[in-house]
Every structure is written in structure tokens, then in C-alpha cells.
Length: 448
Ligand code: GLN
Image (cartoon, rainbow, N blue to C red):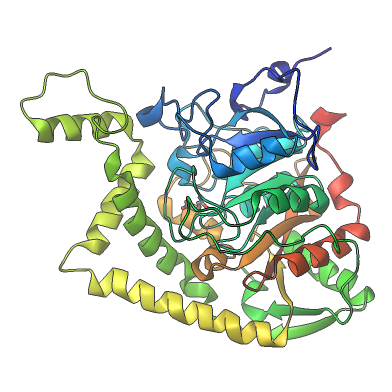
């Protein structure tokens, strides 16, 4: 018998845990679940892929951990991610890059790359991740699995290490929509420990999952189609549109002109919040402390932070500090907040015309390790996903095709977005697609 360790040739896991002999009974009974290393667990460490938190042991579990364990899930370990969830490739993890099981010369996407790979390589049934600008949906697309970001406020963030609190959301990876629906149904619902959590009972996500939606209206924005997508991506999305049409859906043309400003808005808001959230890692309250002899407190802070953080995290902190500084606050942060409002309005208008919005999750399939070596080209990976978080709506990525490159199959992701708290319908629309397609059943070679 092979163990999970032997199969983790992709560096998906930072820690693999022994499976307990006794687990609880419940709706998730027997489901093996991996946890992104930025969600705190009393078992093991929570490092956020950073030297800053190398030996950090949480004294408590995140709310989602308690809830899924109580429902019978079996936690199998912590998965590698880009440092503090900043990135789109999982190359920027202090514990080494994570490799894509479809082609190990390529990235799995990020920042929840380890979670995506653990599920894609069938090392576990499902995984938890976090999505601030696309970090669940983008790696799910690049690894050929389902990645679901619930509406902001549906799932408690208590115990998710904060990156950008107004955008961060815990969500799931799985092979089929149903497992994600079961997990989020278990995790959702009010939590007094997260003041942004909606004060409502968890919605029923599984009850009507297999009932098709009558008169489903699918909105396709012109901004999501066209020359920034590769030909294979464009063809796969057009085929997905035809699949829905054959299922009786009406395809509606919609307009989301602010798609283009999503990246610039996101890369002001997210670094601003990160610069504040990461101030706690000063070597005293939290995080790595330098061994150097320092002459004063300031030097201790700066040496500890210089040693503990990697270069992308430092870049974000500097960007964030800059956009919040008194001379530039209005020009950058305030403007980004205004744009955020406009992006929300644009979605409000769109959801009057359609039930879900369809497009590609990413413009191209998995790229090579080292290929995107300037920050801007990495940031552009989030072109279709960042606005979902900016508005706080729900989104899901589903396998919808493949590109064949150098004899290797590279998965393509279909992105569906749903309105605020319309998660049950988003998942039903996703299930309709999986009921009539086979893409989610295709596995990388390593599984055979
Ligand atoms: N790629 C985006 C970033 O680097 C999104 C990350 C995320 O969703 N955590 O910030």
C-alpha cells in the first residue's frame, strides 16, 4: 500500500497528519479534507507558507474546522500556499513551489495551489482554501477540479489568517459540485466570532442541487470573451454556452465594462488591507524574531520583518502603505473604494437580466514554473476573478475542457458567478453542467 506521503511528489502538503481511529458521524462522515495552511488548526502548525510563522501553533481551531470535524470530516493535513495567500502560482511558498499534477513543469495556480493539487491528484476527497481575488477558482481551473467561493459573509472567517479582510473568503475544492455543496452547507451560518458573518441560518445548498433550474438565464459579458483568451479557452467556453443552451437556458448578452479596472482596484484595496493586517508580525506579538543584537525596538522590528517575509509580501506591504499614506490616500485608496461601489452597481444591473454570469476562469491554462517573473503579469491572472471578491458575490470554477500542449492535457475552467447569497442557485447551475459533461471525471496520469 502506498502512503499519501509517497504520492505527494507535487509538494502539495506542508504537513500530513495521522488519520484518527475514531471520527464523528454526520453528513461529512468519512470525507477526507485537506486544509490550506492559512486556516488555523489546533493540530500541527499554521505557517501561511511563510518563514514568519514557521513554528506557529494555534491554540484554537477556525470555526470551519470545528464545524466540518463535528460533521464527520477527516482532516488529513495542511496544504502549501503562496506566502500569506498572495500570488497566483504557489511558487512563492517558503516550503518550495507546488507542482501541477497534469504537467509538473507547470504551476498549479494559486494561492491555494496545494489544496487544488491534493484534490486533483486524488490524495483526498476535498480541501479548504481561501479566495481573496481568485485563489480558489484559479487553481481549481488550472488543476481540473471544482473550486467554490461562497458569497462574502456566508462562511465565518474566524481563524482564517487575515490578508485583506473585506475580500477574504473561505471556500472549497472538490471533484464534484456536490461535495463542495455539502462542505459549505456545513460550514455556513452565523458565527458570533466573525462580525462580518451574516446573521442567518446556513442555506440549504444540497436539498435542490439536482433539480435543474427552469428558464435559467445565463449572462455572457462581451468583456469576458475575445483576444485575451487562448483559442482553446475561447472554444471551451463557447462549447459550455452551447451545453447550457441545449439544456434549455437562455443566453443573454450583458455588459460589465468595469472588468478591466478590477485588477487596478484590487491591487490597491488588497495591499492596503494587507499592510494593516500584517503589522502584527513584529517578532514580539507574533512571528519570527531575529537573532541579531538590535540597538532598539525599531531595529528589532525591521530586522525580524526583513528576515521573516518573502519578497512578494514585502512588495504588497509597501504598496499598501503607500496607497494609505496621507498624500496619496485620496488618489489611490479612496478612488479604489469608489470604483468598488461602481463594480457592485454593475453587477446589480447585470443580475436583473440574468441568474448567473458565465465566462472563463482564466484567459489561459497552467503556465510554466518561472514564466511569469514580473509582478504585473502574475497580477493579470486575476482578470476574471477579482471583481467577484470586490463585489462580494459568489463564484465557482468547473472543469470544461482541455488544451493539449506538448502532449500533455491542461485543464480549462468555466467560471460561473452568482448574485449575493444566491449560492444555492449558483451551485444548481453548476450541477446542471456537471450532469451533462464528463470533464470532471478525467484525471491526471498520476491517478491511473
Ligand atoms: N492572486 C491574487 C493575489 O495575489 C489573489 C490571491 C487570493 O485570492 N488569495 O492577491
